[in-house]
Amino acid sequence: MANEIGKVVIVGGGIIGCSIAYHLTEMGIPCTLVERVSIACAASGHAGGFLARNWSDHGPTGPLSRESFDLHKKYGAMFDSDYRAVDTLEVMVKEDSKRTKSSPNVPDWVDKSVIGHTDVLGDLTNTAQVHPKKLSKCFIEAAQKKGCEVIIDQVVGVEFSTEDKTFIKAVNLQNKGTLPCDKLVLAMGPWTNVANQWFSHKLPTIGACRAHHIVITPSEPVSAHALFVNYRSKDGNDNPEVYPRPDGTVYICGRTDYEPLPEHAGLVEPNSESLNFLHRVGANISSTLEGSKLETGHACYLPLPENNVPAIGLIPNYHGKLYIAAGHSCWGILNAPATGKNLAELIVHGNSAIDLSPFDPAKFI
Image 1 (cartoon, rainbow, N blue to C red):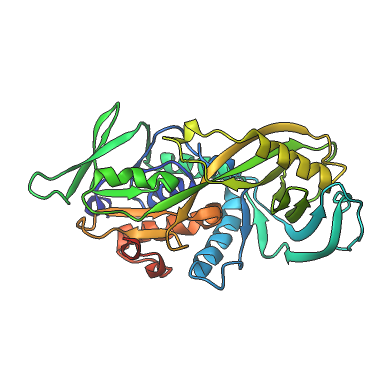
Image 2: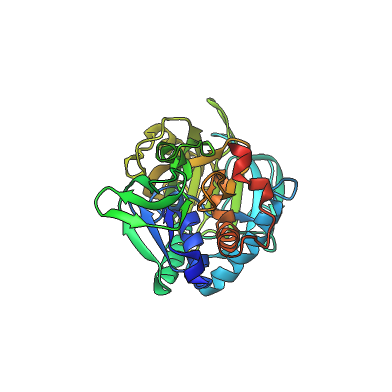
């Protein structure tokens, strides 16, 4: 089978690319993954890792999300990825106000400016969390043990047959020369548009928005409750999210903007005011989080698809040799396992367990 498929090259070392590499090698297909900066250096290294089994049931990603949620549970037992089930709540917070109403659903550590009604969004059966960077590295390390090569370098172009400028022969690397390939997979997230310069036919357009996060260490451990917050302040309304992690830290994210995408992930910079706001959010939700030690604060760019669904599958016009998996927006971590599994099946068998037609790249071109 490996001889029939030939050499597969994956461009992009985020969780999507790592998942594709893992699932290909599990099927006995060796591959090469090329990443410009480092594994999980962009959104996959900075995301919160929240998982929901059925929140996409109303849309085309429903089957993908359900399978992926179940795969996360399976891989949580296999890998050291900080996977755990969580309860999930929606709470309303008014900055600097006194708590006006209590709810039996709210954990003790959420003890400050919570007002109004609290909704249960999920429980231990249908919401969970994972550490995205840890899972990405688990995927790629397992893939390397089964024949995947990882190259840290920049792809600068694609080489085609002299007789047919749509017949892919190799990718050109900035420092390490030419890398032959029979199948090429683009898993470049918000940097997918860079690849347009390599091809004569247009690729799916993937946009980008910048999201901020901080990681803090509270004065004492807090329970496994993910919070989706309707946050009211003098500046208006925001919707930050709060995820306690198994290692004792708390991840808080929010404040998106449309700052232009930098050349590569290593150049991403956060807005300091947005980081300060997220620290303030924690202090207004919980006395346990107030005064917490700030471990890190950063930003990442989410890949935004043109049609509100990711592009997953075979790109037409390139003799069945070019594939893409990009544009998963804020659900990239959730959907990475099933995306990798089903795209690997498509590459190897020509079809997949889940119907990928809603994500057909031809619809985006």
